[in-house]
Image: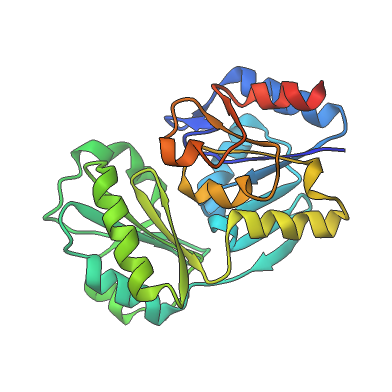
Length: 261
């Protein structure tokens, strides 16, 4: 038995769609008795629609960069949170940091901290993802802990996102994990990563790392590249990401083909 852990955005999902050949390959993988893991920075609400549209037969959902793991029976395997006070400090510090927006997910709602001064013209397709939009004062009065907090550059500026990631990591790294996923900066619960989550799944399944294949495209995928020789990223990925993966591909179905060989 083999396990394929695939990232979503920029890997399996492009412009909120999944390539037909990738869906067919995952279905074939499952038919052959192997297991499929969705490994993403998204929350459950962020993957639910995709799962339903494409009828994805998954064995585990590794969500929020490892902060939440759910098995194929919808049983919670791991459940960690970003503390409310840390989330509020990050929101307060970066709310007016140029062309950026912030969202928070409390597992019930994905909440956008709106800022009318920010140009949103390049991210209009994202707004259906948010279940609620609030002002910064409302967030400061909320007492919720969060599955994930994400700071993102609305002009899709990767350099700006990298700078924000470093600032958050330097100041709050004792309390949270910080990953850059393209122009998003994802803040996850301390000790949580995709790699750590996959090791937890392998422990449950009583399997070794050599049974695991991983594929992703960004920095939050590096932790899962580091735990197996069967790691894959894309020819178009950033060079700093590519150096951590053992193999380069163009489509996810290529990884499935390798497994089925």
